[in-house]
Image 1 (cartoon, rainbow, N blue to C red):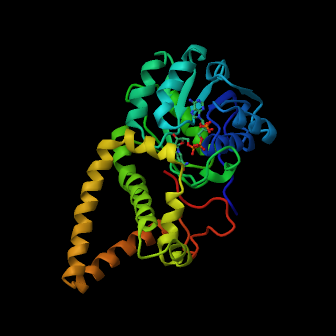
Image 2: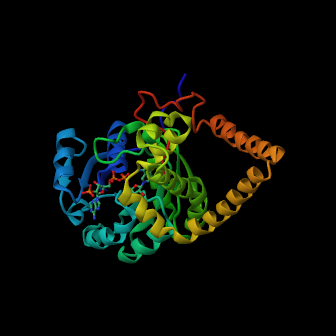
Image 3: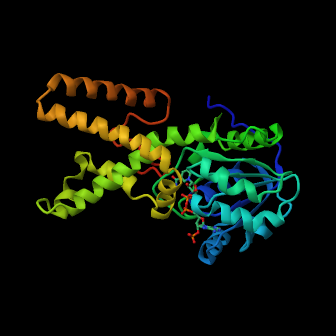
Length: 317
Ligand code: NAP
């Protein structure tokens, strides 16, 4: 029998700022799990706001974040990390004194640095990163199950009140996630290698293939199932979001990238030297990592990675 979903007493009001893939998935999940009696949203784009009304994703839609956050118990910023500080500055005047603010940004130290200074001291700030996503953007791309059985990492500063951390933890559990708490700096290092560098490699390899003169573009597409296709899914991710991630997690990404380049040089040398045992040992080691991911329920063993016909292609930043 499937486990009963984790339930919490509904908050009076939550405000979600930014109604893209992640914001609209939270709104859908919050509605389904009755996480709040009232959901108020704000988005910069009038087109997105109109669409949110059509899709009935919120009880109220506001253009200005400072109006959306009035009387909200919990405010979740779901905007690109590069504008999180600006949005925090804009909305701060509307926050009630005991509100809790969170976010979903894929980078945490920069968000902590950019957002906290604009929030009143009485407001709890509990940054969060749901490690779940797809390559799609916008309010139509979201779905309530996006976070189910995925990890959500919380990175509060040491002095944040325990009740604020507990509220955010419970909301994510009610959305179906497993929750872990760590420091923002550690999060950024872990995600640099598990998400950010892989995205950089995907963007780069797809770019290299597009520029090749000896192989035509139609051949690249026709024979893409040889491995390239899986990189193209990642390389189709939102350019604004990913530009901001690399600019805001520069240190950790550069550190992991330099280790990766050393390992790539070593693999190149093994090919040059026709070092078969070395290559075999490397590929055997990496295969075990994939088995571990499947065993932890974070992926499927299906040859199409469970993607066919499914909205929730695995991924996430
Ligand atoms: P998205 O689909 O592009 O949505 C972002 C939304 O925020 C858009 O509707 C955008 O409006 C709006 N926005 C931008 N600037 C704004 C502002 N100043 N005020 C109010 N709204 C604003 O992006 P997403 O994938 O949901 O990503 C949102 C956040 O989640 C990012 O911080 C990202 O790092 C994080 N995240 C993403 C994933 C993923 O896989 N996608 C996974 C985990 C975490 P416009 O369309 O008009 O720009």
